[in-house]
Image (cartoon, rainbow, N blue to C red; front, top):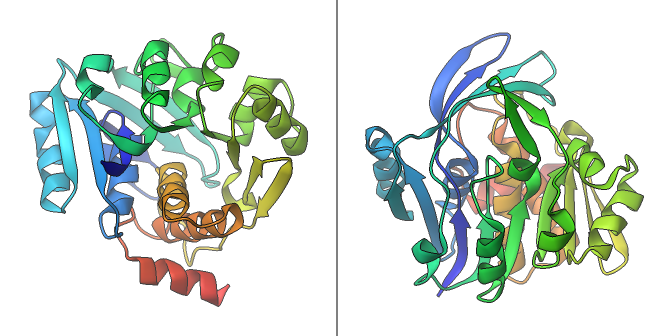
Length: 289
């Protein structure tokens, strides 16, 4: 029985900023897993990559992460282009991978399943329903809101949202994604709509403006921690959710878990690639702000 099982594709990422161009592994699976490698938790990653990218899986295993990797003809390939303000980006999809199946998860037992679809077809609806019968389901909504047109990624609504969200305990979205899902830009109203559709904890991130979590009729305001420098914002949402779910699994309340997650995300922004720090570093950031 794992505390958390993450399901998602490791990607190839090309990250372009005004000051640099980087080529690295990416995706929810990569950033979420890397962020947990030095934390005290029983964790499993279920992923799928082409044989040419198995080196990324080996590197995660070498860092102590348990990984079940299934073969795919292609690895997902993203291009992320940031302006000076790294709260926004332009994104392209250059390759796609095979979807996950129920058969791949039959033998996995976990308290919480965190689903990180990058594209709408990654994790079928029937798989979400199946996982909900086995444990708590945490879902990053982003993949279901992405439509790829001539390789460019566009935000679109998710037709099956109300059918699926009744099986989701924790939903993560940014403010733009929340607006697409609910038709509402106001966080208080938008989170309540998502809760009315069945979500127990609605996590809404807004980059440097902080985050908000709605649960049980209460909206928790989580302030952002200011990083010493903004080097690379890719994967901040995944890092945030790693910290949040880690704290919730350990029994922390929503406010504490959100603050821990925000501090963890701010540390991640200070260097390229994933967060690989320690709990003491996160607690130190929280204490100094």
